[in-house]
Figure 1: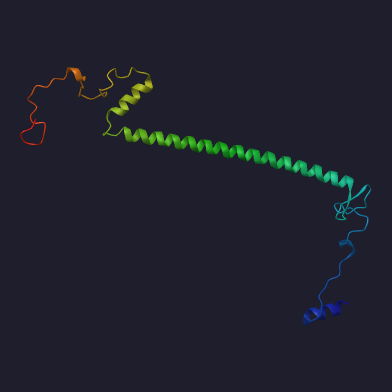
Figure 2: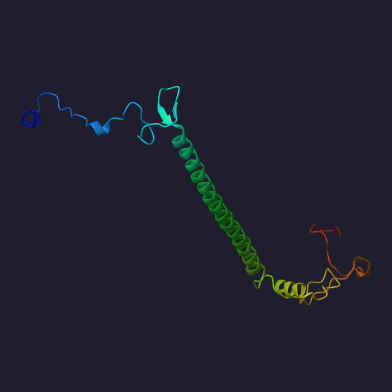
Length: 160
């Protein structure tokens, strides 16, 4: 038999089927999970034979595995949520820092002085029209009087 198989393999002709051993085929009265003879057999609608104890053990093992994976998934979600929260916080801090840098430039000289006073709890400027640190004072409208020496108001000749 072995020589015929070898010749068929070398020549490439014929069938090259292999025989299955007795250990590769399940016995008629054995469980499909444990491959042991059934003590308390249960049959499925498809015709598979199982031992009731093996099925229950399998279900319990699956429940434990699912619970373990669920805990791992929840832990990973908590870590991911914490990372997202930290990323949002750092983005917000970056935006605030960039705003401080832009507003604290020489084009905005009073900003840093004003923001530092406000942070320290100092009294803010009583005159909201006057910017802290500036030499220009703004007077209320009723105290400003026209003297008549302002010159021409209109750009058209002959009109005032």
